[in-house]
Image (cartoon, rainbow, N blue to C red; front, side, top):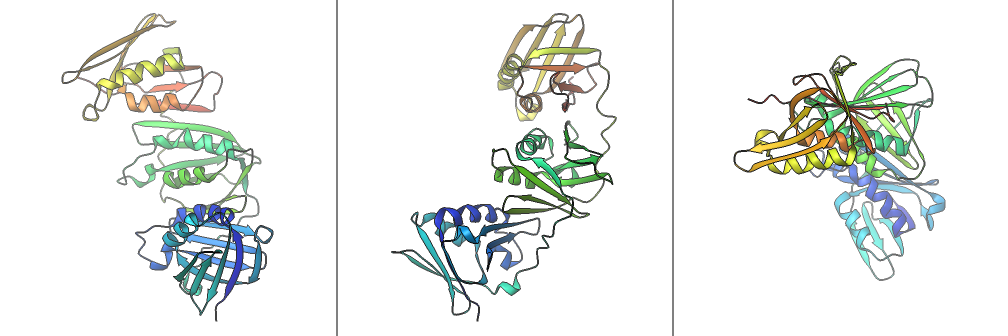
Length: 374
């Protein structure tokens, strides 16, 4: 007979449930994976969830439980257990398994009786760790994802481009994302040199979910690398993601090394000019705006026959001339990733890539391809 009994404060259990439930999919073809597995051991409570793409395990140590009376395990419908705990009062919650697979959730004045599932039917999630993980600061990791993930492709027609490419050589981590129209690259130093080079692609949406679960405080994240998966360990949480199969496109020759034109601009001035010009663009014409450089005058303009026309000018230090068009949406995303007072726009001609960088931070490079106009 399966049994389990413990008492825990609502906020402690809800925090773990909120994180664990991010791995649940209501569309899962395997019914048991719509549930959360509770596994109560002498050392504490483990919660498991998986949609086969992502698996999450959270852990509440014994000293965080109000009481632990009887160890055991059960699988409970994830949708219901999370909502029930969320709406209970802020007090101690008693959770007990009776009569095999019946789960009783109770407080002083409330009691829920839920039907559970045999935990032995829950698949093994294989959350083993490596001996030498890569350790990275959580703030650095979150910034790295935020500065690149927007450049991934939303289309599943080229699955690899929906992911972020992690390449590690020695003690340098290079993170790349591209949808074939733009590219984001970030370089980060890691805690130790790896013996064998790493080249993997992690689904972008999984990294976004993980990033949301990390606190902003100065803490660390462990990255455990395998041939077909990657495991992230943060505090009492383990986050496992599958990898995308295939070889990520070579991008080393895409970013030019030399430029005919390098314009240093105020972040606010350039961003606001492009943002205003984008008001007169539409998805139908790819949100196209035009940059015109006439020596020391930079003009951003947009002209839509159906909507109207806008022109904005600022002075810059240059003796060059160029006319180039690009997607305002892509350029705004790229500029926004820097959050610096000054950025540098680098160009060669009206058909070569536009590269955005910052003189203070050489670790980040953004690239946007121009749009050919009639």
